[in-house]
Length: 210
Image (cartoon, one colour):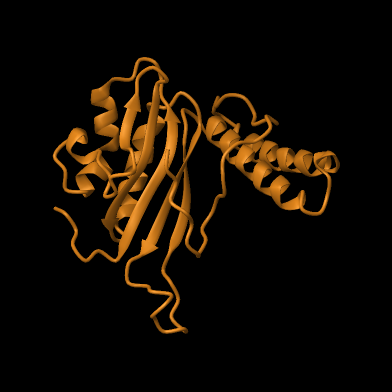
């Protein structure tokens, strides 16, 4: 059912490359945790965002890309729906991908509210991929981009090779710790980085539009 007076406005944003054999029925099932959370009876019914200017949930067959730019009212329990969706998308993904989720506090008014009151805004970066190596590759690339962007304020990019090498070493060590009895693909490696910020954070982030 639609959630009236929900404490949060939740924005989901990300592009997930899918395998060539994935069907629309599989995509609908994988996204069911979030479109059913919105009170819809199908993906077609629930793919529309709360905001008309946002594309919502859509699949681009030519690029084999699942595109998400979708907002729904909700509560903290939406995190469980996100976890279930990501687990399902792992089985459909061709490559690793990041999904940004922003929780906007509907009750917070920075202009008229109590100056001592803090917003409950939150930002979460989630990852999906066909195996742990693909997910770690995306995590590595995002971290490299964040660190390089931060440090280029003080250093020339050519000076940061050692920093990037240390990040690669950290991820390589983490990967090697996983490879005891599992075959999970190739180690994360330097590829230039791509994407945005990770982790949790306060403060309001601009909504992404395609």
